[in-house]
Image (cartoon, rainbow, N blue to C red; front, side):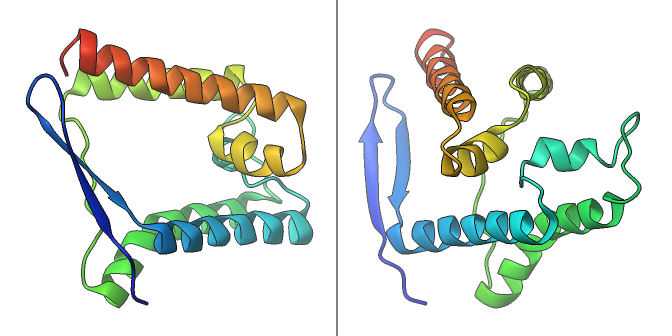
Length: 161
């Protein structure tokens, strides 16, 4: 599949170069696949494709023995997506992750706390909840997004990370 790529280079006030790629075809295809998988899970199992809910069904204290095999397969699918991509396209999409363990640990705890507090995660609320016109999911998604915007602003502009 050919892909249209536009590379934008942004020079910020600290003279750091931030590169972003505009990839409408792969973005559209990825969104369609996420939507299709969410619809398939809802139609076949009656379950919402929220990652926090799927993971919670395989961890104590709320292990769901009936849902366990399906949940494990879903998570395995997430984990092998990168290697499958590599087999077909010869490269793995680049990801940049901080090597600061304090930041990573804090971020993980905050995301976990937010998923519990919001009664679901971004995939459950943002993909499935919004498509069902859930007001609760709309509020949760707006909250997730605003929190992300504020966090990036603070980390980049105030803390200089």
